[in-house]
Length: 215
Image 1: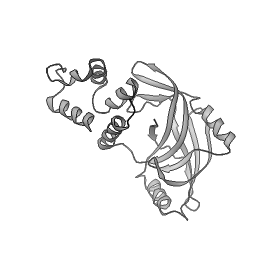
Image 2: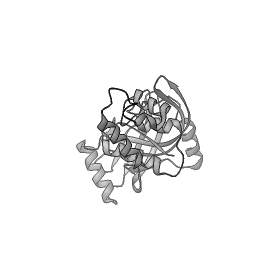
Image 3: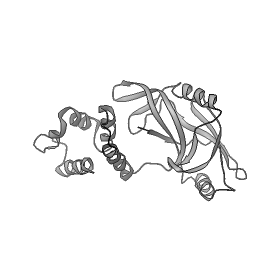
């Protein structure tokens, strides 16, 4: 299952004539709303694998594999994070031209990596990601809205594959507190009964959770 991690775009440079831009696709030790963070070195093995293939991860619009925007010219880890240099095909692709306009205007303000986790550990409620297979780095708008979070949860339960406990808890944390998510995982669906729920959860919140899980 592909995961995503979005961070505020730290644009280092862009060229209006060539569509070239550079910045950071991910920042180390930056905890996202899912309580995930990347450890330095998380991308190194994947980047070596891409180098052997003579290629780099895709440059996409909003993680949509049907909307490539251009190509990455360089991608590497430094002490700060995953540094990328890309070129948007602004003279040949209308979507790339539109994306570059949003990039300059600031209405697109994030870079998001698409990956599969290979190794991680927990520190409290934070998942420290130590090794990934990196698939793509997308230009995205920030912040992610509640509707997109709900869509992620529905997709998880509708995928036909039994999600892991960690995956379920991760997505539940988008619609409830960390403590509530852990309680739901521990107590199962009986936790959704208002008589069993914690006092700080309103009946409507419980119904919203049920509706999400039902799809």
